[in-house]
Length: 177
Figure 1 (tube, rainbow, N blue to C red):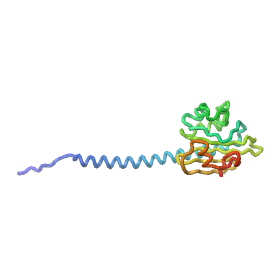
Figure 2 (figure 1 turned 90 degrees about the vertical axis):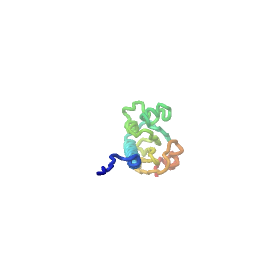
Figure 3 (figure 1 turned 135 degrees about the vertical axis):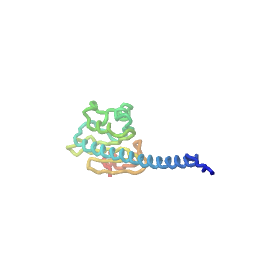
Figure 4 (figure 1 turned 30 degrees about the vertical axis):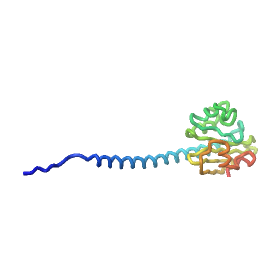
C-alpha cells in the first residue's frame, strides 16, 4: 500500500503574501489615523483661538500689532523667552493670571500664533484678532466674531499670515474677513 505524502505547514511564498497583505492594511490604517489626528489638532486650535477672542473682551493688558509667536513647542513661554514676543500680549508679567497666555499655552506643539490689537480699551471699541496655523492652513477670529479659515501652506512667519489674512493688519482694522 502506498502512503500518501502529505506535507504540513506553509510555503515561503504563502507566508510572504500574508505579510505583504498585513503591511498594506497597516499602511492604510496609519494613513487614516494620521489624518484624524491632524483634524483633531485643528479642531482644538480653532476652539482655543475662539476662546482667546472671547477672552479679549475681558483683557486690558499690553498691546501689539502683527506679532508672530511660536512655534508652540514647550508652551508659549518658550517662544516669548526666545525673543519673538518680549513684553507683549502673551508675555504678561504674571503669566499665571493671563487667560490669553493660558489658552495659548494649551495649543498643540508646533502651532504658530499671529495677533493684532489696537490698544483701545474694549469698552471704547477696541479691535483685535487672533490667528493660528493649522495642519493645512490657518484660522483667524476677530473681535466682531468673524471666523475665517485659510487653506494652503501653514503660515510660520508674519508675511505668510498677512498673505492668508490681508485685512488682519493695523491699517485694515484688525479684521479676519
